Amino acid sequence: MTKKRIYVSGALTSSGVPLENLEQAKGVAQEIMDLGASPFVPHFSILYDEAYVRRPHDFWLSLDFPWLECADAIYRIPGKSKGADAEVAFAECRGIPVFHDMDSLRQWLAAWELCPPPAPSSLTTSEMDFFAEKLKKNFERGYFPKVIINDSEKLHREPTGAVRSVDADSYRLDLVSPIAAHLILADVRSGLLDSDTYRIGLINCLQCVYKFLAGEGLDYLFVAVQQLSGILDGGWCPGLANVFLSVGHACHEGAVKYDDFNWEHGFPVHDLLNHAIRHLLLDLQGDTTEDHLGHASWNLFAAIHSHELWPHLNAGHLRGPGCKPPAQSELISKDKESESATCCSAEA
Picture 1 (cartoon, rainbow, N blue to C red):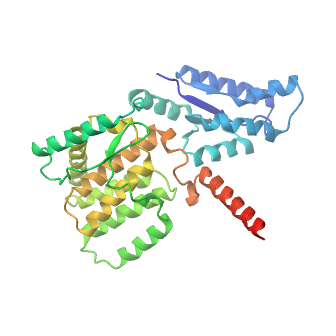
Picture 2: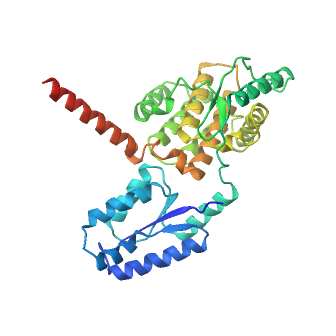
Picture 3: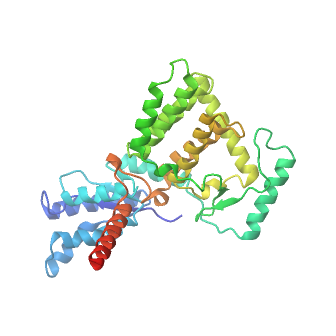
């Protein structure tokens, strides 16, 4: 298995004694190697700086970011450091997990080892036709008694090789303003009677998903699942059992349509939540052609899985704290602004 790349971030010259900071970083790197991962220690630049021409701090920081961008995780050594803080902010914008203690990093690496995303695989046109034919035959055999499946259903393949239907491909509900969505849903919620627990639960679930998409943290996806638990049989424990049963049924459908571990080739969080939101909205409309809550639950489970284990699929696709768009989007926006300004100047 490929070793995970761990970027070691911490003070070098901004606080403390530089050589002592280097020794501390070397100690952290040794622990990371003992965990079976591959550390990158930017602190070693001080050795070059001492032997050759001294360069400014910003120069070294600019060399660090390309390495940080391809890291699987970052380990932040405690201590004041503007450079390390900038590295952490850079990582968070790209969905790269940040760890502040070795135990958390150890658990994360253990999870990777137990459940790594399978190697990507390509899918030919003939294989896509095979899946479509398999889907049709299984429907004819009665494997989908509660689901209406169109014989002409088209399939979408992710770059990772994972396959799914294209039913949500004409939507990007994950890009809807999460602030506006939350406020509008809250306004709708305030107009419902307390006895309308079903629709209240759906709206609360949607609000939680958009809270997560606003960069408010993974906990909101857990709360979204809890809200669905309240809808399914009106109580936390029995409702949670029904959520698992619904997710299990959706897993069965996916296994029959595609393959047992098709989805573990990898789906990014934003794609999964786009599908989840669509199912929740269709259920809110009263559509009964599918088990929308079951499929919404499956997508929420898979989104949590993707967020925790596949940061490389999510880098640059999720907003950060304060609803800030990913740094990549900010750069693209700045490029467009620059192009616009150049065009305006040329026209003038």
